[in-house]
Image (cartoon, rainbow, N blue to C red; front, side, top):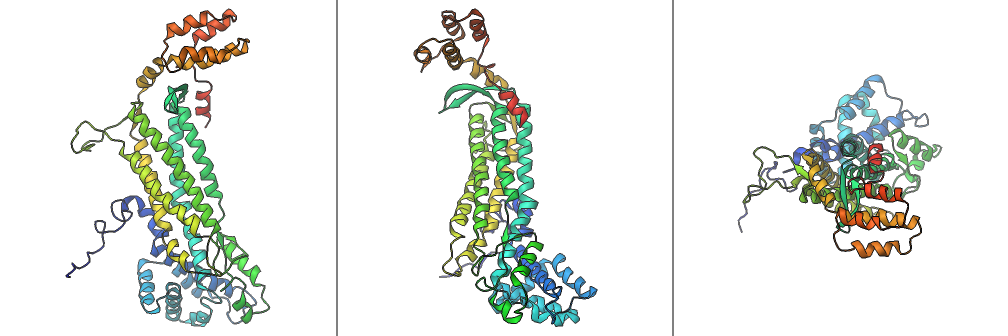
Length: 461
């Protein structure tokens, strides 16, 4: 069977939409969570470990580096390029081992520098590949979190907060179980989302990212065989801390990835809140509470010219779901490894960037959708004016205060499953044996004014 030659890789031929259709949204992640990013960070860890050993007095055979040597090593970290990564990949074709390829690349660079030849025996010293990998992935997540995820999440919270304040007093009919319910305000409903999101953002920001550097099975066996007088656990803890990570003293060959499960769980909760928001906004658009601003030359339907579809919120919902499917697998799979190590985590970890990519797409889509919304206050008012039955709640509550028996049952008989207008409700209130000022206070209520402290809560978020 004749097969066509493979197509060159570009945005149109990319297998994943992350690097194809949605590449413009995920471009900012490339530096950190791509294979280039992983190789760059492996190089950083290897160089930093070499520098750390050279600065350790007990390691007599590796004298501290001179200024020119340090400059060369720093250049490999701060000036790492796609060409450097490509060289590592070409070495990997021979070694068939990605981390060893980084070591050989650094050996080449040290030899080329000249005096750094003396450091070659201490490249990857006493390390298993997972010493380098676990630290690199932790640094990868830290970069993605600080540089991409948190700024987008904070921006989304700020946008929603601004809308909550703007619509703080925009009274609207609530719907519990999809049915008319006690009024609220649009601002208060958006404030709920801000509060929920900010709790998760704070947890994501504070989540410790763990790392280890303790050898093949976590016991410093190789380290002690070479330098039995060195306090390797103390040295490793200080090194991991110097990278801005939290030391994990108890591991097998691999750092057990519990923090990755925790990271995934927080991201899942963020995405779940986003899905909840998108579905609510979709529904509010459907019933006319929000109008969407039209975009010139944009088509809503291929056959129905009038359509302005809520595609941004649908896109956000779908991509949040994609991200969560991956985060769920990370949380369930990564903390499990057979005995002291198996390789099933390795291929899974390579997809961390994909999950973050889907999450970024969702956040961008939601932000774009929010920017198109215009609140239709007339639609909110019309629904409220057609729902006087919701005032059965305050009426029966005041009746209870004044000791009227079966207050709930009386109002249930009057309003459950049926409409009641202003005149009918006022006629009922006039029959109540309660103080006259209380009757007047109840009659002064309207569905639009029966919002409790919703406005104040919305403004306070």
